[in-house]
Length: 455
Image (cartoon, rainbow, N blue to C red; front, top):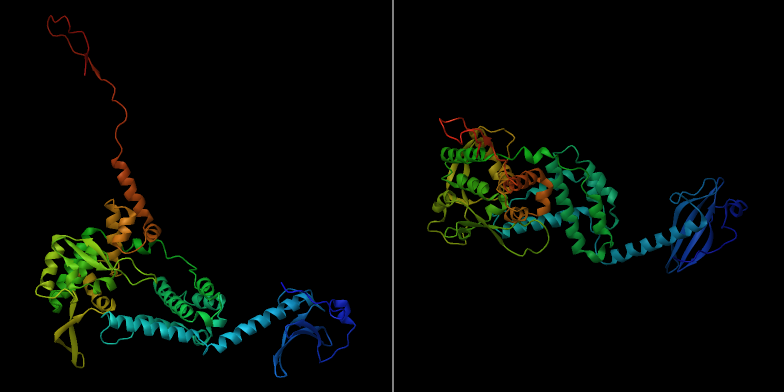
């Protein structure tokens, strides 16, 4: 810590009382071209910072009230020594701002969002998920929910409170939507912080993490409501095939719903599968890993065993096709008039989960299930099916491309049930049953008739 400078005219409240009111501050030299001034008013005084910029130019700034009339609180009212510390901190902050400004244009929250959604859109096009140049969901969420005041804020001056207040304003949204929106903003800010590290404070990553930390947990029953018994899963699959047939999907809808149920994978993973990912001889599907997270993945695919019924359903989709071609295609409809649609001759890959959502309602209704049933129920149910089958938590997590911690956090009750069932199978009788004595009645002249028989 820098040495405090003594000044008999400013050191104490008593000393400052002897000074006459003046609009011109009385300065004390703190060194390094920095001065701390005291401006005496009719009722108390204030502390003033003066910083020399060179070429006979100065920056003058009032930093706080002096503790002439009120006791110091360390923020708005300062003692002489506290004012010196505050002046030095302001000078340090000003120097950092000048350094950042010299490196290039100021990066705002809006800049971070624009770069992030542009990178997302380009990535989707590169991987074939978005071949028509459509704008991604992240752009819509952030554009709608990030207000103008936050968007215009420079990242260098962003505070945790700014982000926490923004997140609190999402409370009226559904928990899942609010979390996805918060995750998108966090990813955008972290990407900018990594890219422009030299232009931002070293604490920017902590600022982002603290400001967007989860403030409420997802309701415990939210996932349990979407865990379906195998009978309901079969009804959903059968309903998907019925809707497929009646809607002219030519098997495309039924196949993708079947694989979602069989693998428990996310839609984005299944949509990226290719013909070569079907390994019929090994009775498994190679599911591409998720793009979630920023680290480098150790593998590109996850092998998931499936039944012969799944492989039989996929056989028409792979017959005569090359290994690199998308496994799942879908019909394309085009408008031929107001309210009139015509199916085009060509088919294209599935692009986003929203394309399944619009037809999912018909599938759920056809299956006779609750209207709130969501496609992610197939994933939840697959995870729980593995736990109930006695598979280790780590294996269930690996098969579903997630972490053991996530499984334990959201499916703890099912892990306990599965472990209890496995433990029950290990229970064996540990004591010998006592002998039972059965008396035998007289049989003629048998001399042993009165003797008991042991069984």
